[in-house]
Amino acid sequence: MINMIALNLDNTLLTNDKRISQRNEQALKKLHEAGMMVVLCTGRPINAIWKYIEQLGLTSDLDYTITFNGALVIHNTDKKVLAKQGLKLTGLAPLYEFAKQHEFPLDVLDFDQVYPVSDLTPSIYQQMLGASMNYTPTPFAKLGDGLFSKAVMASQREKIDLVQATLDQNMTAHYHIVRSQPQIIEFLDHDMDKAVGLLELLTHFNWTYDNLMTFGDAENDLGMIKAAKVGVSMANGTDEIKQAANEITLSNEDDGVAAFTDGFFK
Image (cartoon, rainbow, N blue to C red; front, side, top):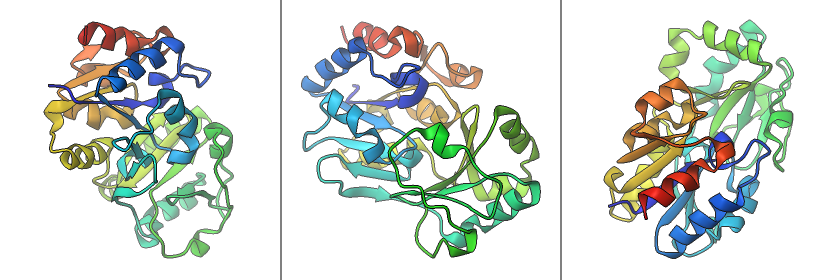
């Protein structure tokens, strides 16, 4: 039995102009009001997507969000943390040296804000993200000894192609690396994934992956698509996501989420 629907945002639930369509909104609200748990799964912090949480009415005592691609599971109404995992500065040092050697940009995120690493090539992450977050340019050595959720490289598509082609065994051993958008590649703790955060949440409710339906389109959705009882790829999803999914629905521009849930739960 499906008890939880987990949804990626960009190019999945959201249209290309970053909106939740009226049809998707109505379909998810109807399911939520009937007792289905609807969970947004994003790389962003909860404050950056709060308008979507409010739009869908995900503000009951049972509502949670998966943020930072699984690294933080947070209760919507009071922002209490259910599960949290990240990297220390020492864990990010190999990535910093890699970026410095190849003249790549780097932004490091804790669980509250973004730190563009100011002693490296300038980044376009702030421009790409378009979210109301704090950005504090900081030299790598001054980032401190706190816990960091992830790091990202954001640049023109050709530059990120080069990053991906340059990644060596040292990088892949240290980090779970996902290309979330053509212009963004993300570096997470080596065993971190949206599926990890979802398992924490499922376990909290005494459920398993057999109770989970997921929707996604890109590489950072692969883990949760594979893990779920029903993993759904958007028509605009990558070939890898489509191959891993149980089902394929319409594109994010064609209300693919509502089109699938309307049929599945009718």
